[in-house]
Length: 390
Image (tube, rainbow, N blue to C red):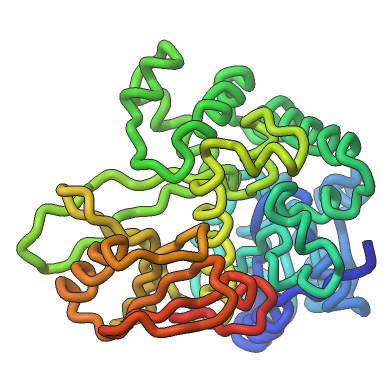
């Protein structure tokens, strides 16, 4: 597959203009080093998964940074924890923005290490696998929902090759990467938990139920979920609370972030199987949520994502919150939208004092449903034709 321009590149350049260093973080194999090399072809690029590069830095870390005070990109920085305090000294000894780009993945402690050592000196940029709007012009958009967004998967030409890659990806992270980073959790248990999550994808998270099914404590499952979230496998979408006189749910909703991994773990082996899968609607919901969050956080940095649900069960799938602006979004796989299905949206808008709400659906064209609610066709959002409503 030819090079696909990443929408995060503009944000990378913006952060380089504001900070001495930028950390591009995200799941393994999502394209972090490719983005860095494509955006900064004249920089020196090192990869800490390459033994020679690791030895070069480890031999005299401070000396190397002093000799290379700028235009230096280092991949997989979680493999050399001493790098962050050394970078702090190098940055403080010489002023100037746009000097270092770091990438990192598969490490729950990565962001904490970067934030603690380089507070005020580093900009953070999350990179996800390919979004739908990024592959809209490549001919891969139709494969994106079932197979997910990892570049290597979409570049493969056969279903068998894609399945093999997903298998290898899961084993590599659970059996090699996490133990190498000091995460001593049984790979079999994490794998079993991931498979269980395919059955509750898009549901309220019930840690006790998962613990009973695995035969472990709730505390153990909570810790496992922390690791899976820190390695970008899952998203715990938190409920939104406001000063309203209603009882709202306190439990997050759980999603597997990449739709390809969701389907693979659920045992689906062919795109045709998705049409009859009983979790198809939840899969679509997760796909749309990930795409909307990805683009919203790039277009309006600082945007936060939540869902809204009362204890009586009235729910809106996604709230995008940017400052004081709140955008409620309901997600419908089908084309037809019945008025009763919008009752929760109207209640949410009333409770939060909002004038506009949106429904993302399979409709072919935008239309207004009255009282400030608009239908946005998913095809237009996925292709990048329509702007993200936030």
